[in-house]
Image (cartoon, rainbow, N blue to C red; front, side, top):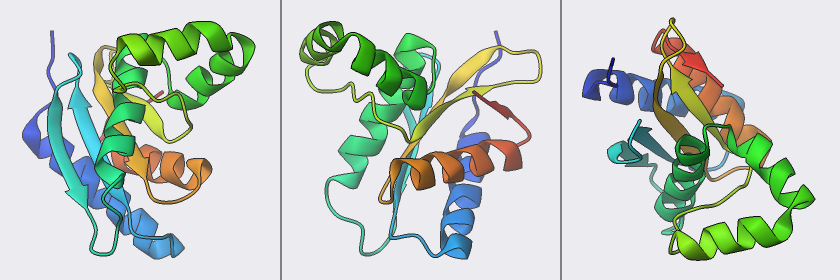
Length: 141
């Protein structure tokens, strides 16, 4: 099984922050998790609130744990709210099904982890995550 390297995680964060800056988004927090949901790397821009880490990590943790982007999980939560409230409670608050995290896969489609962002709208958060994954030569999902 291929693993996500620290170098790749840093590249994802660097590219995501560059995309955010280019687009003029608010200060971001970006969390990259490995395939087991463990934190690989995190960055919080100057001026980003203290909540950015927890939100970014919870988006990514839910994505990697459920094998789907947080956008997909958000839609599933609308369709089955009781399950997702129970899941969030079971996960001790580490699970957040809100747009802003994508899976990280290699070219062969193997799951390497997930990246989540917090600071902008869900669409903005998701866009910079996608840009970061692509810049690392990996595939988002």
